[in-house]
Image 1 (cartoon, rainbow, N blue to C red):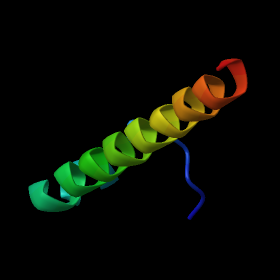
Image 2: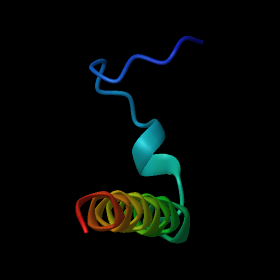
Image 3: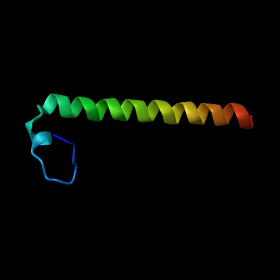
Image 4: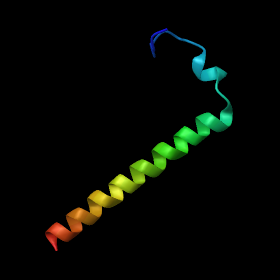
Amino acid sequence: MAFDPLSGSQDAQARPLWQRLGWMVLIWIVSVTVLGAVAYALRLWLA
């Protein structure tokens, strides 16, 4: 079974809510961390 995000599969709906929210929180934390690291690096470079 290949992953096809455009097929309209019900796989996303079959996952529990806590797992979907967990992924969303994880992606948010990683993105904020990367953004902070880039901002800190720019601050050190420009200062």
